[in-house]
Image (cartoon, rainbow, N blue to C red; front, top):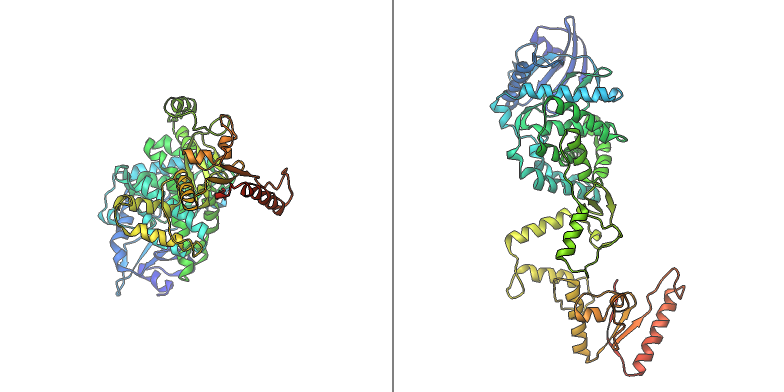
Length: 525
């Protein structure tokens, strides 16, 4: 229906109409001889009870807050086809994204958000409580099926990782969190300000009954998006203002790192779906690029650094992860042969793909270990491990599909003549078994290895490891081991791989001439 006809349902005549963006409703700014209004048209009759609840909730708190709210100017009008319209006040002001973000402004935003939430605390509405929206952070996992719409595999992995973390860290404790009616979408388009204070909130269309901390997390998300160079300081200012009016609990604050990530994921998932289904508009996609940029920063940001910063802002003590005490305990219970790397050992607490996070808030790029081949805590691998551990975790004495299936997939990557595989639980066991098999089949006792190689902590593995027998405490090369030069592109004896190969061939030929033909050649890839 035309907006100029809809406005007449309220006894008004439009002198100017401007179409506005929106999701669940078709929105207009309507200028009449009696003033400016917001006209909203809802096609779905099933939304009526929820919108009535929204109107009642706004009306109930309007006199308890110091900011302007979109107050209803007339009763809802239900049209013949069941669709309905509403008319509310038009609020003047600048949007949050239109002004510089001073500390004073951000703290005021936090304070007035808190006052609103305090006013909303006692509100009860069955329609709002029953609502199940995929934009509501407590229902973040409803968005997981949209992962297929993210075309880039690496971006998809980031979102999948954070959704998995949401399941583990948020969903598991969600029922224990303080919950109430909240605004549900305090983004930069719904916050009206002057230079240094919050003056109004609009668009309560995402109102929901949800954990209170979700309100804070959503607001912080959009403040972070608007302040990419000083996001932590900006978020801390909002949090400080909020906490001074409506103190947060430690458990709530500790969830903020993940909840902010979850909100970013919801945003990019819905953008990806909209683009895939040709429903994308400039309004829907406005935060897509900054959200992706922030997610890529978030994946390499140490969660402990964010958590500790936010805890300090709210006056909580910081957990002291004493690395010296941990080191002393390790020396008491672990063998000295299990050496730690670096003069000052790093106390790691978590990881994500190629990044590792220590106990003091630092992030490390892991270019050393083998796990980054697929990534630390890769969500697909974590999911499979979890599912199998909950279903069946046994050994080779029983018949089960997974052993055969995995072996077939592994052998498919081998040359045809390699048609059997033995699965063991460590590299040491693999090296030991390989050496024993080679010696048994060939009836030879010599093993060829590369210098500086390491092949495990069994007796056979140590005997074949130059890293061990040539190192401190080593007993020297065993008589049945043939050591070949390790090719080094820089500062090596030769400048080409071919030269190293020719030297290795010469060494092997000398041993073979002496009747010392090797049973096997071991080398780390």
